Length: 327
Image (cartoon, rainbow, N blue to C red):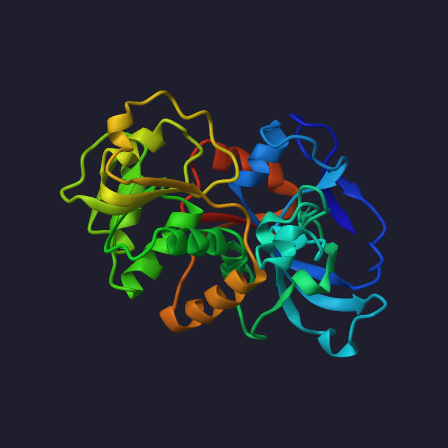
């Protein structure tokens, strides 16, 4: 197989040839059709997320065809198209798994971080953390749903029964979530980097009722805000825009430090919560919703060999919607 490998944190990925992986017990071998490029991948490459498996194949938004199975896997899945998300394994026996909170598992495996992922032509993955997709689904359009869509959905659930919702950082996750909100008749207020006119237009095209810079005041008080940008200074900024009793959801796996802020911003029973990973139940809910809501993803496709370019474009804010590698 061909694969783009991270050999050292902070270094570019290298294109390598390697034997196709052999699926172990409860694993399937995929011929990768598409793999989304997520900001979390940048956090791994740059060292913001510590201690990745090295050498590592990044990528946790995988769509592929099952071409072989390991022991314990039913033959019927061969030939199926499946999706593979960030959560790639859980222990099933810790306090959190037993309590139905597998996203908080004490001994998890994460695709493209502690487990090899989808920046490759082939991938061996746990069948229990793979989701069968419609045979006619578009791999490139579907790939961003495996993380940007799922984390956005979990973030939206944590925002509660909100009518007016602020989305900070209008990239892969927000452009999907804005469509979910519109389908649910929730008003989206999009906050983008100051001066980013492309992102403002993109948000308005996808149904946002207002789009402005992250340091601007929206024309309405927010019931909730969801922060996808990894910038801690947006937490007090969002709290300042949320009504009493409202919620600010931090939707990323990594964020810079939250600065000191006056207690008055939090007072009034405002809530600040974080989203950690996802559950398989989240995935089942979201993919059912996605079919009913008619979600469409905006993508920029890159060949596998240009994974470093895709990461650089994502870092520089040059990607409209989501970047996707196509082996």
